[in-house]
Image (tube, rainbow, N blue to C red; front, side, top):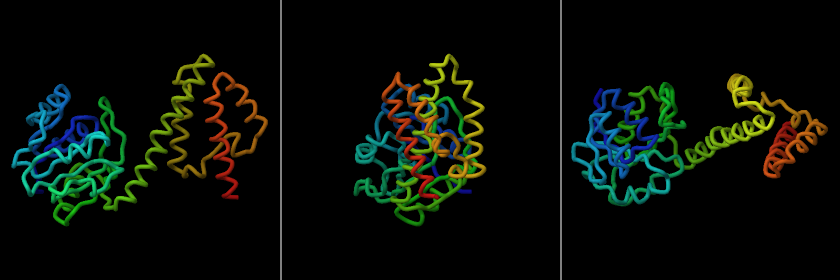
Length: 260
């Protein structure tokens, strides 16, 4: 299988995970461009690439993956310099092809639907990659890259990808925040987060097996007003937690009321 030389703009969590996975799949990594010398040089050394603080990419690079924070994406795309035929693809879920400046002719989106952490290795097997590009050849290159690391490929337009990114905020970011708040309440009772782990595992497992909408339990779905009022009293130490509890309870009640 033909594998193009790849360079990266960025050396953060997403760039690091993708770069290492593609490197292990046999792709040649030309350059890691990152203003942060420590992380940039470390990733470059790992992938036998060169590190640069600038955004001038070598002509040998056929694909540049731009994996930077959303607020920096536009400026990085406008600043980078590469050969005219180089495919430049960003990894952001909330931006489309329209963010690319006019001088970049071959462009694409290489968005993995996953949360990445520096110290955790994520499995790429069947990991959804949502792709979009300016032309058929670029689409084939991006597909090859995703499938080379055993990802599952979907070609979607910008609006659908934005909705999927929003969905990910609910199931990942908001869920994690609820775990954080649950941990704080458990600590109030003198217990560590570990006491909640069996419950968390079963909740997620049940949602995946049966569907989350069929797995809801608790006082809200039962319309157990007595328990709800007691819980709100217990949360008297935090008006913010009372507000969140009340809004979540109302949301659950209204959701299942609509379902009948």
